[in-house]
Every structure is written in structure tokens, then in C-alpha cells.
Image (tube, rainbow, N blue to C red):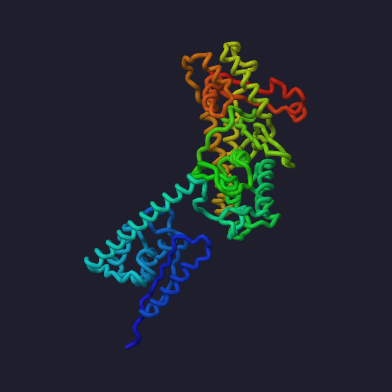
Length: 484
């Protein structure tokens, strides 16, 4: 008779948190599991690893190593799964049920180094495994609750409450985490911020950082525009405490940029680099966004940057048409001038001095619809090119995703233009008092009043000479379309 064939063994290693990304924990687990497999006479066919991933019921991230291991076992490529402990394999009762079903369908069984071996072929063994899984799940949930409460306390005290390394600070400083500014990285942040304000392109910031030779917090070259955008919009570099995308207080660590600069960065970035679909909701800071449009049909954005003290950096305080958001990029207007013009017009409308706009504006909807058709034609062309092999998957997605986003933005813009505000009876004296109140906390009320009288504000390009003259742009370069 020949030698017995050894059982094929799949090793699974996992650790919940690896801030250094050095994989030391999973490496130790693999060494111990290999030693156990050799002792039991198993043949290790593959090692599956999920580093820096939780297996608790509170975790939201998918564990690709675990899923690959299950697929291999279900496909008959392993006879036994070895892990350091039951809790390394899973802390979820539902996943244990998958493992029980796997054993019943294929005969694959489990071995651990420190949790004992539960016989999944007997009712007693399955009961014991389920009890252990319930205990592991409860412990993970209790730990999560304690961590969450401690993080909330740190936020309330203005202290840091976890997260990845922050670009701009010296890692491993004896002063503590985020307590010592890295002068090279801080210079890159400030110059990158200026480049963003000038160009409106995150890619230009990435190229700048590549030329400067600065590296990511993990020592890698900046290759992804999304990572650059997330770094620039990080509230920590402004010394701010944030939770779930919202600033909740001032932090007790040195800031690299001011809060005003942070808000200007958010305005310039829009949703780029924001967490979740469409980015976090932020309160309005300026009066006219959503009402003011360029003659090309694109919405204009507030671009405000006012660095404190004497500085070489330029100051911006304007509404601009941004080409990266589907506009012509050829029109801008100083924010104080435009808001004063609108304030005067609405004041007259409240007092009953105006019967209508001085000039009727052309409806921008035809221009918007024409632009949508152009984008849809380009979208179809790229799709056809992908089907014919002209573009590979990555090239096609790089072209299709921005096109789809532009189309969605224009459709949403059309919806906004179609809205009509319902006019209700109000106290004119009280309304006028509210309208002339410039306090920041009254902004929401002033925008409500603006929406009662103004459908949209259309700005015409006038050229730099007219825009920068002593008397300001011509009054007829702005057309205010009243509500019907």
C-alpha cells in the first residue's frame, strides 16, 4: 500500500487593526498555523489573509480573503481550514452558519491553535461552536461601544480620536500624534492649496507634489487624484475636529491652514474626495450659489480665499464659471459687487419699486439641453469604442464616469430651473428687515427671501478691462430674472 495522501489545508489569518500596514500580526498567525499544520500532517495549499479588517457584526467592509477561502473550500480545493482562533476566523454567527453548511456539504472541518476543535458533524459540537460565536460577537460589540464612547469623549475635549496617519505632521514625533508639523509636507499643502485655487484641478496639485518629491503618509508617490483631494479636504490640517463629515469643534493640535482656508478648499473641490455618494452635506456659506448662472447655462460657484496677514498668496472673492464643472470658464464677477447689485434689486422688489427686470434674459435651458446632447453623443461614442476594443475597461471608465456625472449635474440644474417658488402673504417691513440683516446666522432666511423674488441671476462675460474698472462691470452685464 502507498503512503496516505495528506489532507489539503487552507490557512486563514486576520487582524482587525494594523495602523502601520506592516502585517506583523498576520505574519505571526501564519507562522503559528503552519507549525500546527505540520504537526497534524496537513499539506498547506494556500494562505488567505485579511489584514486590518474587522470580522465583527459592526464591520461594514467586505473580507476578500475570507470570501476567496470559502469559494475555494466550496469548490473542493481544501479539506481543512486552520486559523489561530475562532475569533480570527469570524465573530459573526451568520458566517459560522456558512461554515457549518460548508462542512455538511463538503466535509471540510476546522482546526484552531488556541480555541479548541469543535466537531461540526455533531449537534453537541455545533452547539458549542455557536455559543463561542455568540460570545465572540457580544465581546466585539461591547468593545465597539466602549471605543465609540471613548472617541466621542475625545471629540468633545478637542482631542484626536483615531484615523489614518495625517499628511502634514511628523509621524512618530515625541510630542505626540499630529502635534508636530512637518515643514516640507506643510509647504506642499499650502502650495497645493494655491494651485487648486488657481487651476481648479486636483491633478495639478498631484503633479506639483510629485515634482516636489513629497510622499504619502505611507511613503508612496502621489498617484491618485482622489487621495490628493481627500488630503486637502481633511479638517485635521485646519486644526478642526470632525465626525461623520461634519466639523464639531476646534482641536488641540497645531493647524497648518486656517478654518477659512479649509472652507475655501471645500468650496473649490465640490464633492471631489468627499466620503459617500455626492459627498457630505455642508451648510451654505454664501448668498447666491444655486441662483447665479453664467450665460453659457452653467451654475457659478463662490470662490473665496482670504489669507490672514501679509502674504504672497493672492486673495479671491468672486463667483466663477468653472470649466471642470461643464461651464465655459470665461466668466467671473467679484462677489461683493454682485451680491450688492442683487441686494439692491431685491430691496426694491420688496418695497414695490420694481415692476420687473430691466431686461428679459434668454432661457438657458436650450443651451443646457444642447450640452446634454453633446455629452450623451460622446458617451455613446466611448461605449461603442469600448465594445470595438478601442478602449480597454480602465480607459473607458475614465471617460464614461465624468461624462455621466456631467449629464446628471445638468439634468439636476434643469430641475432647479423648473422650480417655481410659491408666493405667500408676508409682512413686508419684517421681510425687508430680515433681508438687510447681514449676520451669518441669517443667511438661510435671506436665501429664502431671495428665492421668493428671484428665479435666477444670469451673468454675462465682459472681459477683464470692464470687470476691473473703477466703476465695476456694466450694470446690464447682470440680468435678474424674477419669479413669475
